[in-house]
Length: 98
Image (cartoon, rainbow, N blue to C red; front, side):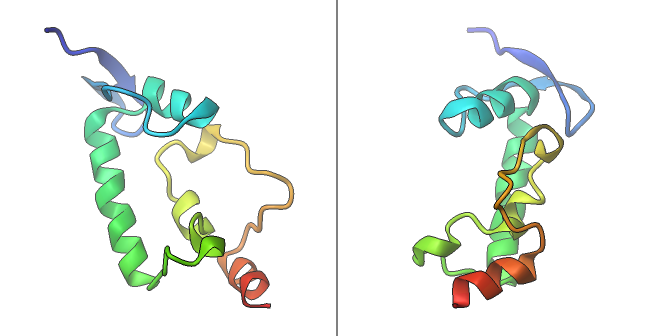
């Protein structure tokens, strides 16, 4: 079995690709095509650190996709953020608390 190699946008080098898209839809496909398995593993470790540092409770439905995580994704420059998506983390948590 051969490992598929891609040019990873995060690592700026050829690296083994993910086995499958990590998310459904266009975002998952972009990550699958442009982010290596190594970079994705680094992102997952960093994501856990952010969840712990900001003490995010992912059981609260409104906090499942906080901007503090999205803004640090390895492929953030290629995703389009919806117009109503808060750009500052403080705005997001103020809206959720209301």
